[in-house]
Amino acid sequence: MAKVHINWYSQELEIKKAAKEGDKIAATILAKQLIQIRKQKTRTYAAQGKVHSIGIQNKTMGSNIKMAEAMKNTADTMKNMNSIMKPEQIAASAQEFQQGITRMNMTDEMIDEALDDMLEGSDDEQESNKIIDQVLGEIGIEISGKMANAPTVSGKVGEGSKSSSKTQVPSDAEIEAQLARLLGS
Image: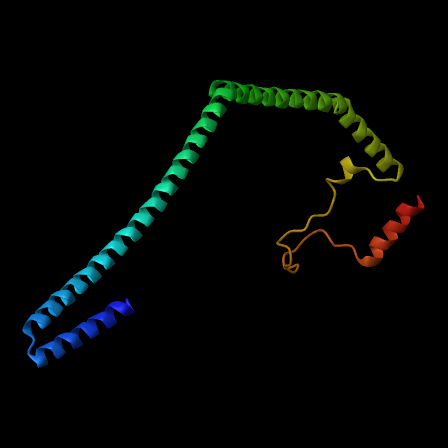
């Protein structure tokens, strides 16, 4: 590119020199050569652009070919997978699995209910109530009769005893004395 520029510059100097000497034919010939050099430069740039464009197109075509090959391989793989794994069979297997889970859950519930029935007899509750009553009776507490006579507090929690109540709250000394009687028995 630098040579072309130098050629133009030297060509222009030659034209000027021929024109100063009055040699019109030499100046015309040199001018035509300068025009041809300029046209050649334009053609060279255009050719370089086309060659570059063709190179890019070749790379693009190569990429497209590789992509087509990859797509073909993918399609073949998918076809093979579809021949191996049939959707109907997969759906049937999934349904069988779901039914198996449902049966297992139902069996689990039935076993749990049977164990609960075996371990929780109605007699157990009555028997445990008898034992509790016997133990409480032995230490001198009768629940059924004394609960009705238990003192009640009227009003809300935290309020003072503004209302007149027939029951009295036992003092700490009375509570300790009753506890000592119970422990002594």
